[in-house]
Length: 310
Ligand code: HSE
Image 1 (spheres, rainbow, N blue to C red):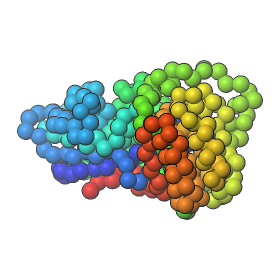
Image 2: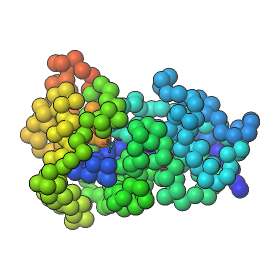
Image 3: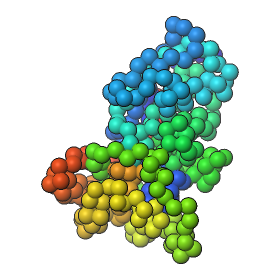
């Protein structure tokens, strides 16, 4: 088997997209984690370093990049292969932007690329998603799948990783607002009720169907009508300071929809153009400045490529 030392990038993602808890997501440009991979000096996989975040453990089994990379080698019976990985952790953890998934996808994707792609994309996805379990205790691909595949992605079924790539509407812009507080996904999942009322189920199913149809029809108006989460957002909004105020700002400025990105604290808006996204970002920054919480805003079109090798 040929060996190709390389560096890879796996983008940050917005999962759930309001109406698809655990089953919808999209990646953005300009933010994500990287992994470089080289031949090692000793048998087996070594995580040689984590750059950019000293709190991330170097232990392969406790780090989503290392764990996902190991799972690829395990699938191929190559756990003795001498390999050195370095993780460039470019984003903080507990942000709601799929930080653990970016590392996991970068780790699994890098090893597969290094070995000249013996595994299919779906097998790489399986390895990356297994690493999500060490991050938050659940096997859900709504961050890993979009980070790996690019574009809007629907996970029809998480256990079997039945993943469907959806179309993107030309010109659609995402704004992500990240208030600098940390919410751990496992905590944000733990507060969710197990039961959903029949009325909410009907509303949310209609909105999920409408959202997906809007992508196929390139219908921004339908997308806007559909982007309303009646199940998860009402249970998590209180974890995010100023959520309702920022949502009002976003909707008044003309966002198509606004909700929580992943498990929070980040929030996202989908907008018809960048000037709407810019004005929401500016007004939200003023609001957070008053309460002395730092806020970072990212504006991006929908990343179509997903993980890439340099
Ligand atoms: N679907 C997940 C959640 C995304 O909302 O808990 C966070 O990883």
